[in-house]
Each structure stands twice: as structure tokens, then as C-alpha cells.
Image (tube, rainbow, N blue to C red; front, side, top):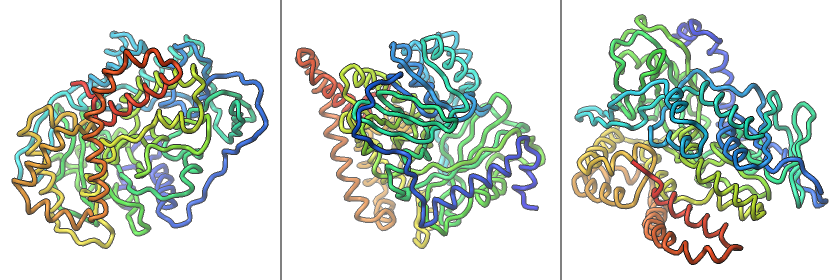
Amino acid sequence: MSLTEKILSQVPGNPLESLRRVDQVWQKLRSENTPIPTTVKTETQLLENYDWDVVICGGTLGILIGATLAKKGWRVALLERGILKGRTQEWNISRKELETFVELNLLSLEELKTAIATEYNPARIGFPDTADIWVKDVLNIGVDPVYLLETLKQRFLEAGGQLFENTAYEATVIHPDGVNIQTSNGQSFKTRLLLDAMGHFSPIVQQAREGKKPDAVCLVVGTCATGYSKNDTGDIFASFTPIQNQCQYFWEAFPARDGRTTYLFTYLDAHPDRFSLEFFFEEYLRLLPEYQKVELSQLTFQRALFGFFPCYRQSPLKTPWNRILPVGDSSGSQSPLSFGGFGAMVRHLKRLTVGIDEALQTNNLSSNALALLQPYQPNVSVTWLFQRSMSIGVNQKVEPHQINQLLAGVFQVMEQLGEPVLKPFLQDVVQFPALAQTLLITSLKQPELVIKILPQVGIGNLLDWMRHYFNLGIYTLLYPVGGAMEPFVKKIQKQKYYYHRWIEQWKYGSGGDYID
């Protein structure tokens, strides 16, 4: 019996079976023949009537946008394949991001306080042979998903939204004037707009991407357990081992209400020779005692965590169809460094709410018009080079400590430049002035590390990165200029939708939405 089998057999809910089921999906993704769903079709005949303004497929994160749109008076239906409820595993986020719920009138201050299950400070960034870096107020809030989703569900229903549980998406026919959605239980939903919140493996997304394999994947495994002697600080980004199995291993740790959550994650591609999630979980259990200075026998495991998150360079996803908008993980709008999910959705929640509301008001529901709601963001695209510098090809030769040495050097520079540089980056927000300073100082202080990394990332990737880096600078200049033009654009009602989307694109694409 392997260590993974031994430990997971002690955890309620049969996580070993679930792990192996997810592993089968991961194996299929690595194979060369990925089947392409064909659930979306188009029809030239008019639908002529519809019952909803918006139908959202996927409830876990769909309820966030569903509640905001229902409160604006739109007729919203939310389809969830199971029962809409949060998992017991907390979602980590920063407090400023969480305040979006109060700003959008989805939670009161008292409800926000109740939604926070844990709060800790400080958090660590750590690499071998380098002094640890400590930061405060970054991903230090653990949100209770069970309470949060139940509260948002009540807001949604109070505002007139209708929830359809045990109702899985099955197929869609797009008409010139609406969308007809078919579900697994034989129901039909006719709507003006379909929001796809079904995540990375949405059949709509798979069809739109035409079976293309992801350009990168983040594998994650972990547990929540009691028995740790120290549980008052966290790790945002830590590494203590050299490259192993053609991967650099990274760790995260957070205090949780019922123990301590620890994650092991790595960045790689979807090559057929990559290892399984079960093997990675075995690596996690092998290294956890050294990482947390604890014996496995001292721990009582509450739950196991595992998954993989695909990323595509062609993101956010622009669907070829009118009246369909991917949101959350379906859109692929998170950076290739982050896991996506809750944090990425919250960051864009206000922007999406305002934009979808305007799209419905002005009937801008074509593919091109909706694409402006999930625009190109150079501050996300530049992170592809960072992801590439932390991953290694199956047959690539890289010095065992090269990645850790590079990251340690970069984070040391960011620490010296101060929190205005370090904290946004740790929250997946890249800004041009901070990036330019960091790269310049790193290249001057440690030119040998920069030279070593060039063969690893490849000249083609570097040239592509320079394009996004240049665009990041342009967006940084355009955002304040666009804002100054607002008074003049108010007179041009017809084009206001497009103008607002351009401003948002420059704002979010330059990291201008970040508030400390």
C-alpha cells in the first residue's frame, strides 16, 4: 500500500477514488486525441420569444454574477448540475478584494465579518539559502464558502432570480434573437444571453477551443489537517527542493478554521510523459514532514485537495458565437501563475456586472461586442514568461537550483523596492513601473541568472513577451487619458458601451484596478 493510499483511506468521503477519477481526466488531457464536444449549434430562424434576459450555467461562481444582475432587475436563471452549496475548504483572498461584496451591496458589513472564517498575518516567501520575506495582508483572509454561497443565494432569490438545481447544461441552439438551452432533465430555457460559468472543462469552452491542448498546466495537491505545532502564519510562495522529475515544486500554507491547509503545486505542460496526480500526491506526503517540520503520524487529516488548472495563451477566450459569454474560469481570464477560481472572479466582478448590464441595455450581444467584456490584458500576458521560467520541458536540461536562484533574486529586488512593488505582484497584478524597475535591477545585479534563463524560456517566447511588455506600457499611458475623456463621451450615447469597455481594458490590462 502506498503512502497516498494509506493516508487517504483515513479521510472521510473516499478521496482516493476522487483523486483517481480526476487523474483519468488529466491523463485524457495529456493524450493526443481529445474528443471535441458539439453542444453548441446555430439556427437562422428567429426564436421570437424568451423567458429570461440571462441564463447562467454553473452555480458555484455563477451565483456571484447572478446575484448582482438580479439586483439590477434583470430576469436571471441559474442552472446548477447538483445542489448549490460551498465546500468546507476555505477560499483565501485579501481583505480589499473581499470588500467588493459590500460595494456591490451583496453583503452587509456584518455578513462580511461572518463570512471570514480565518485571518492571519504575516505570510512568507521563502527559497533555499535566502532570507525569508514576510508580508502582511496578502491572501490572509480565509472565506467560508458554505456561508458565502448560501448568503448570496438568498440575495439572488430575494432579487427575483430563479435557481434550478440538479439541472445540468446539455446543449444550446443560438438564434439571431436569442438562445435556447436544453438541460439534462429535459427542460428548455430561452434567453437573450448565456453566461458560461462551468469552469475550465465547460463543454462550450472545449468546443470553442476545438480540442486544443493547454499551453500550460498547474498541478495542485494538498490537505487540511490538525496537529501542527505552529499555525499562526502562512506561506504564499515557498520552495526548499531543487528541480525534481523535470519540475520545480512550490508550496503554500494557510491557517484554516479546522486545521492547517498545505498545498504542493508545480507548473508544467500537458506532455504525455508527465506524471499523474496520484504520483504528485505521493511526493507531497513524502516532502510534507520536511516542509512543515512535523511527522505525518502527528497529523489528523480532515480532507484532501487536488486538481489541475489548464491555461491557454489565447485567453481570455473569445467564442465564435453571438450571445454566449464565458465568465470566471470558463473565460481563462486568470494568469498562468494563479489557480483562477474565486479570487479571479471577485477581481472582475464589478467590471463584469457593469459591462453585462450595459450590453443588455444596448443589445450589444454579438460575439465582437461581448469579446470586449473579456479583453486582451497585457499585464496577464506578460506573466506567461514568468510561468515559462518556472517550468521545464520533459527533455530540457536545466541546472537543479536555477529556478530557485532566479526567483530568490527577483523577490529580493521586489522586497527592496517596497510593498508598492511586491504586494500587487503577489495578488496577481502586474504593473508596468514595478515590473520595469524589477527587471532592470535584477539584470544589473544578477546578469548571470538572466543569461541562464534565456535558453530555458526560448527566444520566441522572449520576443512574444516583449510585445506584451510594450503593450503594458501603452495601456498604462492610455488609462488616465481615457478617463479624462469621459465628459465628452457622455454625449455620444450610441458608442458609450464601447468606450466604457476600452477604458476598462486599459484599466485592468495595466493593473490600474489594484487598490492597496
